[in-house]
Length: 160
Ligand code: ADP
Image (cartoon, rainbow, N blue to C red; front, side, top):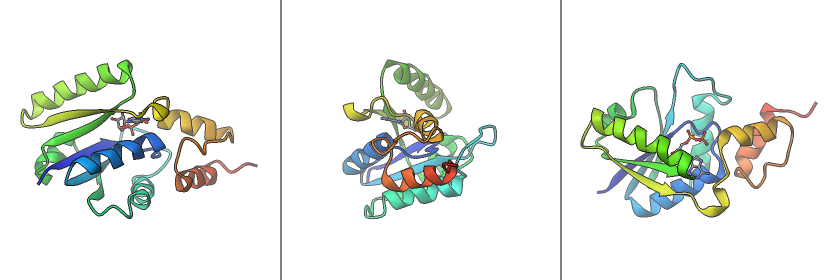
């Protein structure tokens, strides 16, 4: 049984995240999407909202589950008996950050293997922060996030 975890803020989930989630779930027997709850970070969506947005997106995939974690990802993985960590990479900038992170995780637990999945080209400019920024100016975000997330963002930034 090959289990993997895909951690992130998902504040909110974008089409780029969903693309990695679905592709990873095609490779691994079980995929756990881990919603980070970091007290030092300010989120637009609460962890409960981020979980329910993700759950809605993967509702018809029975090998994908969504959980929240407020601990170090290596601790979460140890608790769940998962060794594989999936990270999405949009370009060199992501890669250098993700590479350092994977070295840190390896130092914390040598059994954890990080697997990088490159973004599909149509999503490579997508990041949650830019989707939120466009949404805050009531721009068209329909090509950036799934319809349920577009709706949730419209609710956060009602137009006057
Ligand atoms: P963001 O950078 O969008 O705020 P998160 O912290 O939620 O993202 O990221 C979780 C994971 O998803 C990270 O590994 C990140 O590199 C990856 N990711 C985010 N957006 C994309 C995308 N458009 N294509 C591929 N991977 C992505």
